[in-house]
Every structure is written in C-alpha cells, then in structure tokens.
Amino acid sequence: MNITQMRLARRGFATDEMKFVAESEYLSVETVRSGVAAGGIIIPANLLHKSIKPIGIGKGLRIKINANIGNSQVQSGMDDEMQKLNAAIRYEADAVMDLSTGGGIDSIRKAIIEKSPLPVGTVPVYQAVENFGEVYELSEDDFIDIVEWQAAQGVDFMTIHCGLLKEHIPFTSGRLTGIVSRGGALMARWMTFHDRENPYYVNFDKILEISAKYDVSLSLGDGLRPGCLADANDAAQFAELKTLGELTRKAWEKDVQVMIEGPGHVPFDLIEENIRLQKELCHGAPFYVLGPLVTDIAPGYDHITSAIGATMAAYCGADMLCYVTPREHLGLPEIEDVREGIIAFKIAAHAADVALKRARARERDDEMARARYDFDWKKQFSLSLDPEKAKELRGGSAGKEEDNRYCSMCGPKYCPMRSR
Image 1 (cartoon, one colour):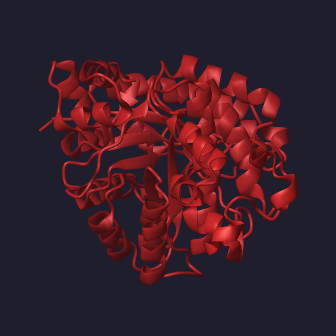
Image 2 (cartoon, helix red, strand yellow; image 1 turned 180 degrees about the horizontal axis):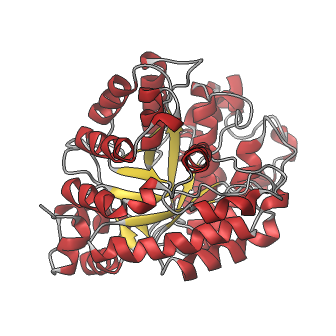
C-alpha cells in the first residue's frame, strides 16, 4: 500500500497528522496540506510508530531541532540511552536519531520507538555494518534489507547516503579532512573495494517502495559534507547535492517524503550561499543541517560554535537543526551533553523563529520581559528553556522575600528596575 502523507495530501485529504501540525503551528490545515503535497513540508510518521506526536518540518513552520542519541562500540548501553531519550523529551527536542553502532542495536531501538513521542530517525548502514562486521562484506541486498528491517520496527525517518557516487570520490582528494561522514565513508569504502556504484543509488527505487509502504521519510544524507572550514562549499559537496536534487524528484514521483541533509563546518559568510544552493538544487525540499560549525578551534564548546551557525542557517532557510553537543569531536555524548546541546539549539531555533516572525514566536519573550520587570522569579523560571539551570544560578536568594526585588549583580542600591 502507498498511503503516505504526501500521497494523501496530493489527493486532497487532510490527515489527522496534518491537522495536528496545523494546530501546533497556528496555521490553516490547507496551508499544511498543500505544503506536504508540494514537498516543501514533511511529517515524519511511520504507520507503525503508535506513540508519536507528529511534527511538521519545512516551509513556513517553526524551526525544529533533532537530538542524536545511541551507543557506540566502546561506550553506553540501554539504560544510558533511555536516559538520553528522557532528556531529549524533557528539554523539548522535536526529534531524535538513534545512531547506535554498538551491541544490542535492535533492543535499544525498539525501546526508543516504544517510549518516544518524538519522531525517531536512524542511519541504516550503521546496523548493516555491525551485523556483518565489515562494510566490504555487504551485498547490495544487505544494504536494502536493513532499510526494510528498520522501517518495520517503526522508524520515522532514515538517513540514506544515496547521493555519493563513485565519480564523486576523487573530488575529496584535495580536502584537508577528506570524508568525515561515517555513512559517507562507509559507502566510499564499499564502492572503492568493489569498484561498483553506490548500492543505495542503484537500488533507489527499492528504497522508495519500502518508504511508501511504511511512510518512512527519507533524509537524503550528505556523505560528502565538509568536516572543516577549509573544505566548505567545494566541488565534492555540491556534486553530491546535485545528485540529491535528482533523487528528490524521483521520490516525489512515488509520493515519498524527503528532506535533504546539509553540513557540517561552514564559515559564517558562506552559510547563506549554502542554503540558497540547496533550495535551488533540491527544488525547495526541507533542509536539515548539522550545525553548521563556524569555527574549528573550540573543542568542548562546539555546541556554541554550531549554534551560531545554526541560527544563521535557520534564518536563511534551513528547516531542522541537528544539535551538536560539547563533546563533539571528543567522544560519545553523555546525558549532560544532551541537555546542553538541546538548549543551545533551542535558543538558535527560537532566535530564527522570532526573526522570521513565525506565528506567536515572540510571545514567550514578551512574557519573560514582563516577569523580569515585575520581579516575578517563579514565572521567569517557568518560562525558561531550562528552569533548573535558572534556579541554580539564581541561588539561595530565590526563596527569601527580602531578596526578591533584586539580584546579586546590582543589589538593592543599583537595580535600574527598582527606580520606577
């Protein structure tokens, strides 16, 4: 069967998911339906993910953020990953991706899907390699079989590195950091070893059949994204992007929902060009970016360097932001890293929503301003993106009536708001 959101939207039906998204975005149902029909909006919602709270990603909607979780071969397990999921829900990420590459992948993913009201994404090639040991040992069928396996588990969107072609690999030879995408590197190794074309590209029609069957949204992966400022906006990146644009049209012909993944590491002054070219080459499909990081020299603070780039990217037209944590480039994120990454990117997304004048985007800011002027600390905490952090930094004076008309920065004598 093919009853994807896009297929129904193109036939004039407004699904419950479209109605839910319209209400949450303060838009008309028709605006959402027509956006899904045209491909400018996607609603990742696998037919088998029963606990999902639908979100819309795309043109005219609030900027969404994704939180990556998942174990590695050397760290973490079920308990840790469920705590990370709980943190993602608590701090209001819009989606999560399970990027597990260690043991127990199926059981971790099953638990995440059952527990998560957020759309769940994956990178299927990770599990394919974990199942077989080495990417060279995979057959073309193995690449496709794992896509169907995860779709049947209830995964809502999948990163498929189908735009990286054999002819693109030489473009990376002059790069400072080569291929930094794990999925992109795996596909390049397979193609080089077998001297054959990308199996995801060759078998894209099969992937579309699976996607249509379960209504899995495709996140067409950027296997050649730049891993440093020096490699941004180069021939390799844009050659792959052009191929992703061709595959976007093929997906739309089968009523399959698509978004495009983007970089990566990009100097601040090149972000606008990057977004503009993506929208042109990929026909207005939603754009999902990792960061981008605007400098390479801040390990331990890359949630900040990337949030700066993410704000600019979102203002220029990116539709979903993949968070970066303080542990980026250093190790597997832990629970506190997930928290800090989410908050940094909630700030970036909200700043862009305000600048883009999304419906009711600034209401919370105005409420906060009034609460500050009234010294209403309780309301300030409730309006905060991270109330616990705000309470912690407010400190012991938060509960003392005599201290509630000022903070320790200005004190009772110099507080400008006490002069009224």
